[in-house]
Image (tube, rainbow, N blue to C red; front, side):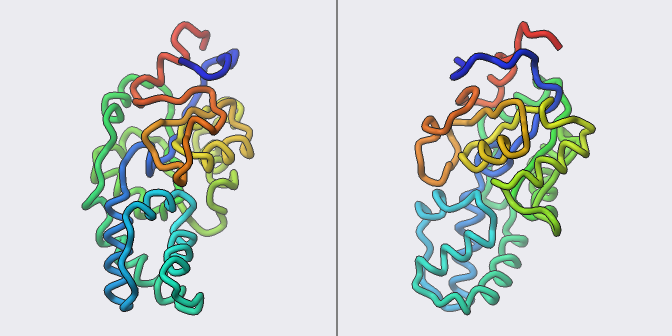
Amino acid sequence: MPDRPLPLQRPQALLIDLDGTLVDTVGDFVAALQATGRELDLGPTDPAWVRQAIGRGGQRLVQGWLARLGAPPERFDAAWAAYSAHYAAINGQHARVFDGVHEAMPLLGLPLACVTNKPQGNAEALLRQLGLRDAFAVVVGQQPGLRPKPHPDALLRACEGLGMAPAQTWMLGDSRNDAESAAAAGCAAVVLMTYGYNHGEPVHEVPALAHLDRLDALPTLWRGQGG
């Protein structure tokens, strides 16, 4: 059921997060950090910590990981270079599409944009590998000139690519990061998935139009509304 009264009109397009919303990618992040730790002779990586740390961009992940290991900030450049190379090589090997995602794609019936803090090339490659790329008219990942979510930059770029005003779109994500970016961009609503990461915090504590257990339940939110 919706958490709030529905907007007056159904969305004209959807902006959809990647990690934690479409795909469970924790295994890829853990493997890349573990490989980086071995290469640079750093300590082990705790998968539980990774799950609550992802979602704010790779650089913040590596910075937090180094701090957790007690490594000095001066090691960041080497760690970031190693992590970036390992992640690109591992991308998708330990990932799985969440239940309800493939089923949802033919049901949504709206232009879709994938908006993620994952680097652009990695995002495109992962979507192709998992059979999701063709569902999206636009993919906006980390790239020069765009601040990561929760800044609105990537969402605004996606709206431009779709030819939509932000107020015509809904944002679908799994975290406070997505909700804050949607509010900053001026999206009409945000819908959050219950199975994602949300930085280790209960996702139901984040205000949203609805909290859903499966993506293929999303069309029930606008069923019966006018176009």
